[in-house]
Amino acid sequence: MHFQQAPPTLGNQYHDDRVLRSYLARVLPRDMLRETEESLAEMGRLAGADLYELQLADRLNEPILTQWDAWGNRIDKIELTALWRLAERIAAEHGVVATAYEQKHGSHSRVHQCALAYLFTPSTDIYSCPLAMTDGAARTLLDSGNQMLIDRAVPHLITRDPNEFWTAGQWMTELTGGSDVGLSETIAKEDAGGFRLYGRKWFTSAATSQIALTLARPEGNPPGGRGLALFYIETRDEQGRPRNIEINRLKDKLGTRKVPTAELTLAGTPAQLVKGTTDGVRNITPLLNITRLWNGISAVALMRRGLALTSDYAHKRVAFGAPLSEKPLHRDTLAGLQAEAEAAFHLAFFVAELTGRSETGEITDDEALLLRLLTPVMKLTTGKQAVMVASEVLETFGGAGYVEDTGLPVLLRDSQVLPIWEGTTNVLALDALRALRSGESLRQFELTVTRCLESVHDPRLTDAARIARSALDHATSWLAETDRPGQPSVEAGARRFSLTLGRTMELALLIKHAQWSLDHECDGRSPINARRFAHSGVDLVGTGFQDLQDMQD
Ligand code: MFK
Image (cartoon, helix red, strand yellow):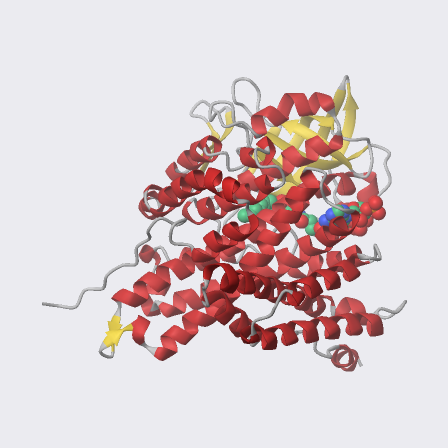
């Protein structure tokens, strides 16, 4: 009998997720937890069974763009993969966007929705991309106060009826670049009763959406982000033909290959203003902040998927006389990854909690400042962690992790987009500095960390708490020393500073949860992970400024 390797398998992804279940038990009132659990268990079942099976079976299929029909007509039709078509229906029926807007559980509805998205994401080939933009578009339209567009579009974006469900695109990036959006060249010409847009959009994710929010410069407006306006587009006419939109090609990307990311030409596309004729960048930021939240939730979801697969495999794969799960070095490797994932989880879901409070108007001014700072900090921190964890997960499988038909390499390729789209690590580090300019936000950050650490009374957590405190003190003193007018030092150190803030907050939140878990669940696993994470490099501030000066000299 020859040796056969057993593949990793998944169970119910809700029932098997200690971290998610323990977190929800802490933050949701008991009745609310009971009410939400059925939906989460059903999504966990789908994610571990039907959707995962289809994902493996559908592995080689990709979206197909057909630009012309047999008779020479331009049709620009995109055919989606089988899993994407199913994912759209399941997302609508299970309220993966709607749950946040139905607000059955007040501000906790956002946590419930993020938990659904977290379970749904790893089994649906980044269908989270159109959902994130749909969610962000709903939020942006609601915030805009444009009642006509709210009445027209929002009911479709937040419905549970798959036949009525619309997704939204976020068409920002042009050839001038995805970061400095103020350089956008698309022109808006006033037309009877509206505008027509002319220009090229260079990265438009999920180009099959029914609507899109985009930026264009009304003729005569000044350069820069303030001269842009935010526009609403309905992408296709009643016959399903693009409305003066040419799909030039689909991008040939490293990962997210099921996402139909297109290059478009807007050739007189009818569009409506969302909110005034200027300040497009500012007006689209509610969308950015929601998609950044989704980015973080997707990061922790992909980390969790990698760990679920490799933990299962470790019990099956025998080498050197024992299952990998009994090998101290393998166990130690997985323990380090689990600590990263668990810390990241608490930060991403903390931002979901604050977002929920902001949407129901319960948020205090101080919490709003904290949310403004934590959104970019969380996105940049978790994005980096997801890539590291995915890379290590592949390695835990040895050669199998490098072979396509195991379905494992896609975890790394898809994770690699997380630090890039929705603002790169560096752009978000600069955004964190922008958020700090509103004065009090760093103080709110410090207070939040302090409150988390004050809850600690178990001696197993005191060393980790000391490390969090020390990283925080170093980050704040570094900022005070370097943030001087005309000095490049603060910008040069922004990434190290922001990652330190992110990892410090992750540690503080994990410590707080660990203490709760000891007190209420008699569970020592979160404390172990808190200690592990504390010793995995929290303070990354370093001293790099002088090095930068030396390099330039
Ligand atoms: C799986 C997960 C789901 C992910 C879905 C992904 C699919 C989508 C794919 C894409 O579309 S990727 C493209 C995403 N693009 C970006 O994220 C843009 C990255 N660049 C930035 O974020 C820049 O920081 C920014 C474009 C905002 C800089 O532009 P400006 O014109 O230099 O901005 P400026 O002047 O600093 O800010 C304009 C106003 O917006 C200011 O307010 P005031 O006018 O009141 O002074 C800023 O304070 C405000 N602002 C900027 N960012 C903000 C914000 N306000 C709130 N939140 C923010 N994040």
